[in-house]
Length: 212
Image 1: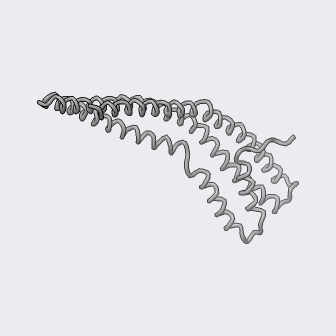
Image 2: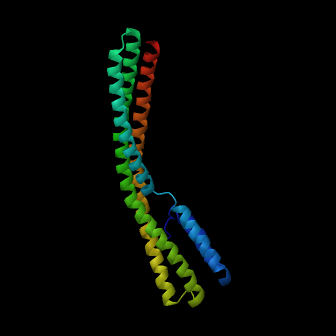
Image 3: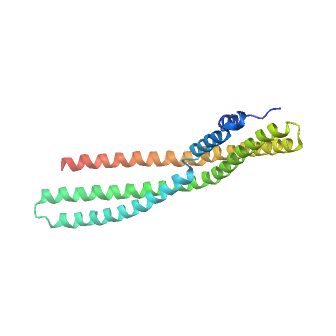
């Protein structure tokens, strides 16, 4: 019974077809294969994880500066002799404080998102390794069939290895997809809800500030 194709099977089939042409054009086709693999792997969960880590460090520095600014506005507002002007500055300080609290919540959600990406990345690395192995075996198998024939022991062995890798790829791909659906999706939704709630809070305080 034939096995169902993986999500990358069509890509692999297209890449594999490169090797069905004449021997003289093989180097050109190898270059196309490398380009295809590069396109597949150009953005990874590891890359996203690294960027999130950098963002979180920047966010922490930004939050610390905002806290200092918030405190300074509060102190300065108390020293203003005009009550209306003092109230306005104090309201702005309160708005900054709300923004800081929202930023803290969003940073916590982003930390969860980063953790989820690390789980996804474990599966993705295995998937990429198997895809690379699959591409290599497809090339070797095509060459073996052309050189030794489809019934040669070397060709049969390569075919068995390709089937084994294909089976493992299907399993790992399912694990990879589940890690996205079951964990990463929840983290993304949680962050989106928190971001929406933060925007609503700040909108209310802007209205209050405008009426002061």
